[in-house]
Image 1 (tube, rainbow, N blue to C red):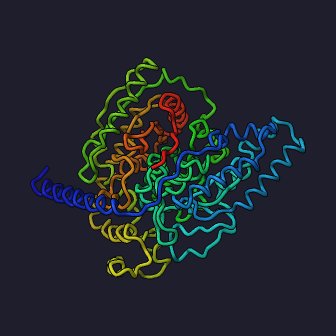
Image 2 (tube, rainbow, N blue to C red):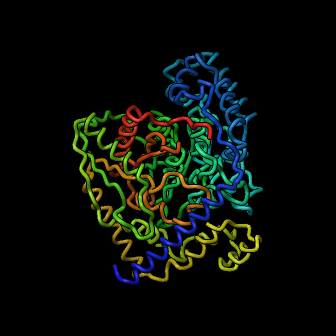
Image 3 (cartoon, rainbow, N blue to C red):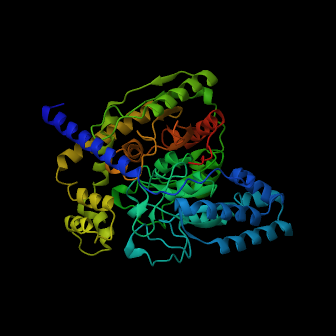
Length: 523
């Protein structure tokens, strides 16, 4: 590294540390509400698959299950601000209709299981997706009065499978920041400690699931927006192979080169629900993923990489995350008799630069982030920043910051082209390494759930998840218990394209070994 590079790095890290000290000092005086405790109703501890089976057999009434989740949401949401608009009355009506269908015995159990694999099961939906009658602002004040008249593709498929939506959950402004806070609904707080973030952009979804206010949910991911909230809230999240699950019906949607980066997928409290929900979301495309195929974990090849190799823009790894990854490796070697090979892939250190270069490939040809913020009108990000300083802007500072950096994205076309090529080389390298029987264990994020506003000090930490959107690889985020401070730990499991069933199988194995989702404690 050159002397200038070292000086810039030192300056950035010094600024970040000072900013973090200020944020942590301020958080000591903040009045965040107390964190809700663990759920008391045993119905809230049954996986979606088990709930649907018992409802179809008539052992449980959907109306009772839905009411249990409504009661839990009413208990936890005032402190968390995860669910931003509910449809409780409609959900109870739909649940009673399910109970009537089961009682009528109009269809045999096998037919009902085939038609309604999620019969009577509550589901929550990220507010960025269309859910009929619900808002779809994506955190933009200019869209706060909008109400959806149709359902997004995945929402429609979940409904057809028998799932019952309870409402929509919070996200970051325009789904492009990893703290879920906006000027329409405010900020969402972590169910494990309300002073900490829930991640983004599917943060409200991760939060309500982690708090046991939902059992399955709908998220989307263009740079880690499923996996980061899943990690920070102690649940499972899956970014599938691109093109498997439809993205239609969400705002903003992807265009041009970003289409292959954006993935819609399931967020679940239990690993066993991931294949079922993914299958429903994917429809006929699920046949490409071999989700019903038995996986012999002992026959897989395992690789592990403990960090990104040293990106200048990303913070160092938390020690507890390094330690828990080592525990995963040790468990796999001991329980399966496999050898987990440590690797160090050089180009991973350019993860942020690669992601940023691919996101800006379309240049002026596609709809820009600034265009979306301004609702098609002319907007000057620098002027918006000045307005924000005086409390006059309708936008959040992360959104304004992104609009400012977007204008700089194409100032170095040769540098961008170089990073795009690095991404292509990295994709080829990882696909060759993994083949059809390889799995990579990789950190979900360099930090355990940060405090509110801390992401501003390390805005590019999402590179640990974002790189896999560029590479087009399926990834499952797995919870691994709680830290000493009671916050979730986790890991990413990565495979090559169309081998989602491998990451899902490893996730279910790790759930049994490490306990999976752990209920929040009172803080």
